[in-house]
Length: 140
Length: 126
Image (cartoon, rainbow over all chains, first blue to last red; front, top):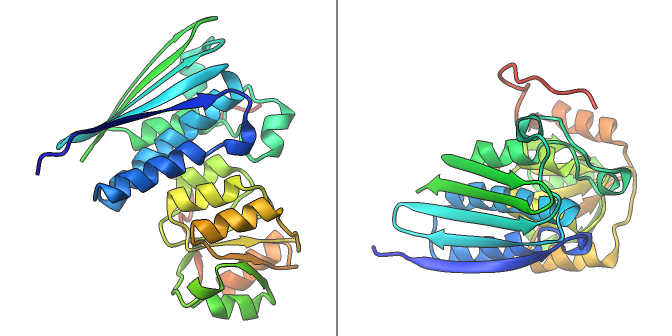
């Protein structure tokens, strides 16, 4: 089988009503491509957490997916404040979310932790006052 | 247990997905924090929550929950119901509180998606 699909979606900061919309669409596409459900699940958990991070903290961002025969590559790019202390942000339970974010069931401090858990390879680069870049690889 | 039996057990209202209630369910996860659902819920489990916003339906779709069970008698907004119909996820609402809901299901053999958290990752106090 020779599979090679690429697609990307913009995500607007602050638009909590639409949180998860992009990930549900990604799930639909991956299922259409016949990707096994456990791989789809890990991919969309990672994109969902990324989507909520962009909405909660950044001005805007992009979620790009590249499906190949061997893996699913996810590139998340946002322009925003960046992350001051990445090591701390990776820890379970650490969050800088305000009450507004928490009232909606977000901001548990599990986001980056969940993303790393779903990944076979995970890289994060953040520049203060510029933005954050995540590269996530999920092996098929 | 079959979802339809859970409706009777908890005297629940079926708000969406009446046609998807003949499904066997063995596990559940109770949470009001959606990241915890993403971290721990298993495919086919019931999501038990006090939240009602449309995000709960998207999360349920992402982790392949068999149903959403809303506690404390809350009625979700119309957007939540229409999204659940679109994504084919049953939504039930019971007047029992979260503790009672979970306990009654556990007594009937439904177990948690995980029993306790493995490992010793430190949780940073807020």
